[in-house]
Length: 142
Image: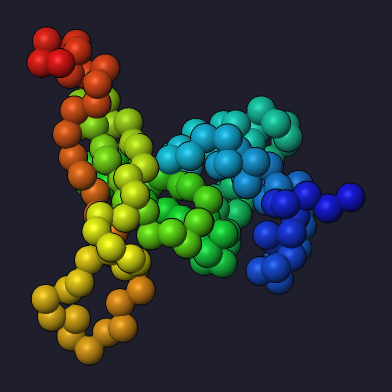
C-alpha cells in the first residue's frame, strides 16, 4: 500500500526510503521544526540513522520542493511541507515560536515588487515579527 508521503517522493523521482518517509512524517507532525528537532524525532522513530543522513534528506526534499525551509533572522532554519500556497509566517521575538499567515494581499506571490529587475516573481517571503500571546501575557502586555 502506498502512502501520501511515498507518493510525494515518487512524484519527485526520489527513492522511497525509511529515512525519507520518517523525515516527511516528522515535518508533517511538527511544522516549523528545526533540523535538530527533526533529527532527534527521526532518530527516536528509526533508531540507527546518522545525523548526516537526516540533513541529506532535508536538503534533497527541499531541493525537490517537497519541503520548504524558512530562515527567520537569528533562528536556525525551520522546515515545513511545501504547499505551494505562498503563505507567510509570524515569529515571536521572545520565544521564537512560528505561525502561518495567509497570503498578505491578493493572489500569489502576494506582493508586487516595485522593481522586479526583469525577474518573473513566483514567490514572496514575508516574516512578521512580534510577541506571541503567551509571551505577551508573561510580559504583562496582553
